[in-house]
Length: 113
Image (cartoon, rainbow, N blue to C red; front, side):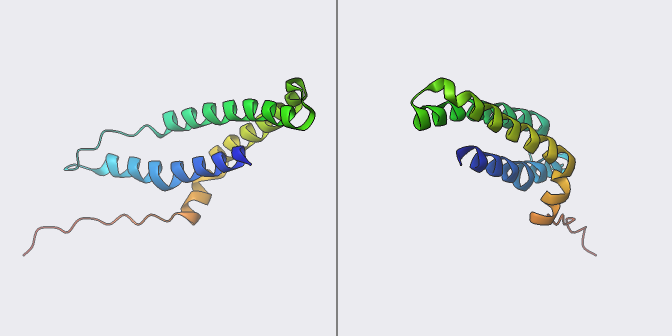
């Protein structure tokens, strides 16, 4: 459950916050925003979710059978879920993100008459 929640929060963070912020930073001339490297944040979220999957699987094995070694199967399965999620997010994430989090970019008003 924790891994699934972390994956959903990663998706929301990337496509509802970081992608629009990077678009804003690219087009900003008067706003002092440093460039946002979305790919770096995706890599950080992938590594942290992979670590959570491995250690979460080991903890589940300890809870269910009393042995940490029994959690290796859970760790492998959760790691596969993380890998599949991030690969599918690379393929279909922008389309799904546009549907779930529409961003309307408005142009600033020009000089008056």
